[in-house]
Length: 256
Image (cartoon, rainbow, N blue to C red):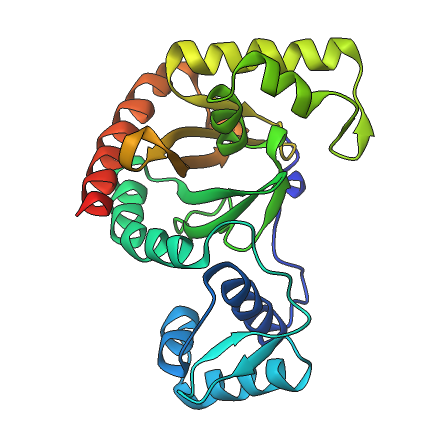
């Protein structure tokens, strides 16, 4: 595997730009942030978070209400997923993600469906020389993620074919490609988890299980991401078992 194939920060990345983009993504997905919450998320001083938020206001990515909290501005489209649900899911997930990352010693994520895409709303990465960096704020087509495959698995075949028919991922899909996706979805239904081997990025493997709410409604996906050089099939059963245990605890906290 070429290590460069994993998504890495730019060699000359600008930290302030990265911080601003992370705050913009959080505003879009969750609907509101205070200066204190923004500072805690980025691990910076409140004065730094305040300056970043004020710049987002200046460029209409954010707006400040009478309560001094910041909300999405005119530039940001409203996320399809409920902002209150997303914010709550992320907040409750973080402790479980920290635990999961420690148990599997790999990067872990929570993501949700937003229209025809998967959006990563929370990530914890491990400090390893070769690792998958945090996905938080990233967006991928549904068919290229474990959460997307879990969503597809919940659809009847007729609805799934409607989704896949014609334009998909911006490209007209061949009958062979559609059948491959259908075959993969049936495997997800049978096994109860999704396996993504270089579907979203070359050199990356992800394993995901559903996060469900009341009535079995799919709220999102809980996943482990690793470089493909560390993926070994004998590890799969253990990782899935840990994912299911942590996922059940997360669902219990959400129910309360």
